[in-house]
Length: 565
Image 1: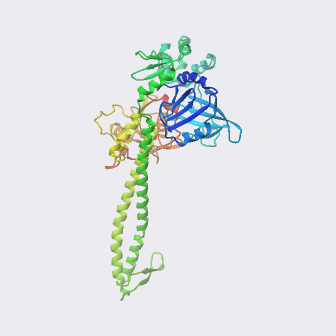
Image 2: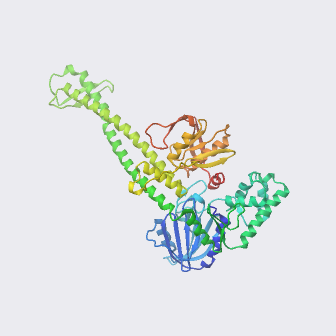
Image 3: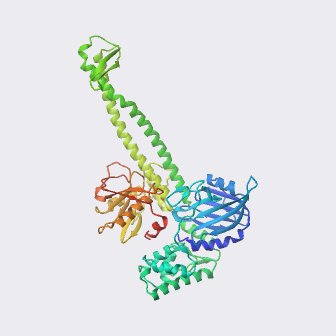
């Protein structure tokens, strides 16, 4: 969805009339939605990862009873507060709602409710006196820390405000060695790929030419296209809505051949877009349902694992049992009567040990009974050890499922995961609709292009298996070491340069449980060296890796700028 900074700017122009209004109520029924209710309107924020939109409606249109812990906090801190201003950080997808209220201590306090509508990194953060009070999604990265009590910093951006003067950004464009589309997205903050493509189309230039190779006339055409886009943006207050596929834009798009609908009210356009694009299914609700099912199964597996490990620990005395029996057999010539206990010399420890016996049996009969117990325990230990390995594999699989549920960007990806959970018996039958035959996705996985190489990231475990089966033996496979995460495949039609391998490894780190770590170990193997043992869960492989790369996860803008489609 091209809900970029310039589109957001149109929405925020609608909110000016709310300045000095009192916030009547806050609703946050799920991690996906926040409602700020004022007497003259309701601000709706859809903060699902991968969506991130904000718009205005006349009033609260649904009956909401539930509320998340973060919603409780917002209600406690902001209900009754006065809205002083709403400001956008340049043309980035970041909006500050600045409130003031009188605290119980009678001191006047200022709170900033910050919406970061940034794709899958969408977040909402409450800040007071420059410190984080709390956030919808806490995180720690090398860029910043979003935890209660931490000093708040905006997400770092090197881009410029799209509406800044030409003399500021022209030199940056001239120096860029990226193709035109990517140069625009890098130089300017808040410009989506769709709008970058629109500007290049209006300039009449080749998309693939690096900016620094443009001649004076070509550069002038590009500048004129940017200025034309700006003028059209400023000439109308509303948004255009396109269908099949649904897209919204503040300008009429030359890159689309179909006729759009124009809405004077930009929020109405956004609302219509969301209905056409996502229907009435709430992605975050589906994500929560799947996460609950996986967590419940994980809890039962951890409980079983604890029980098995305790049983194994109790059976660890079997070697001691065998040693005692062997000592009795070795000294059997010394015993002529039944005894309650014997003291024997252990030649390995070079010390005497006491062995309690059943006085109703002879020492040799006791030793024979011990050996029978030893054999039985040994078989049981082997069974328990195998079962522990099976359960550990299942735990790893479930943790990978949880990671995929967290990373899913849309309803389609979550529905594919729901089917996988159903196939594995993790969802109850009544929670899953009867499946109908659906053709396999023609191009599975998230696809990225980097320096002429195609890189594919699996979105679920069944897709990982398919990507492995369809890969060439010489293709390279990447996976974070010892951490649940996506399987990443680098298509090799020639020897990949080191920076291409590093980019693929960084993708593997980004789409894993370690995505917030500063440094991540990623194993690399040829597909020919992957092995899937029979009977193992989807996505499970063994591999021989001769290379491990230490990398840093990619920032969101770098992920998005290299994504295909």
